[in-house]
Amino acid sequence: MDQTANQTVEKRGTRKERTGDVISNKMSKTIVVRVERRFPHPKFKKVVTAFTKFYAHDEKSEAKVGDKVRIEETRPLSKLKRWRLVEVVVKNTDLDRVTA
Image (cartoon, rainbow, N blue to C red; front, side, top):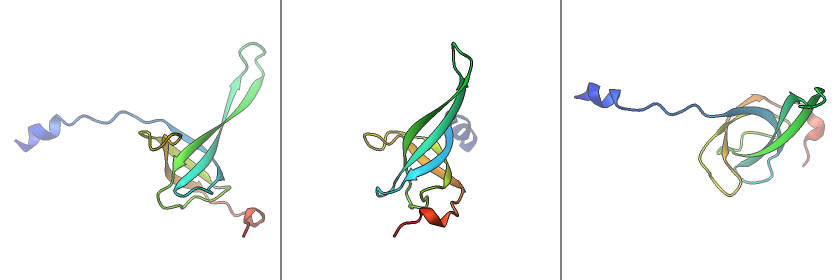
């Protein structure tokens, strides 16, 4: 009986993932991540760089400004938050950005 219950469990669909830089962590449990996207212009074929800001949930407040992070799509958590922090890929070691 346990085997049939395990077989009927459906696998969750794949979620979108993005990698970007943290540009703000001033809100509690929320970070703003800037994601870079490069693509050829449809008409002129020149490579264009576009940036998008995502609001992501950071439960432990572990990401700091300048860190490179990976975020994952999730259910709506607030009016703007639809992403959550998966991991901090690279910590920021630039001490000039640290403000007291």
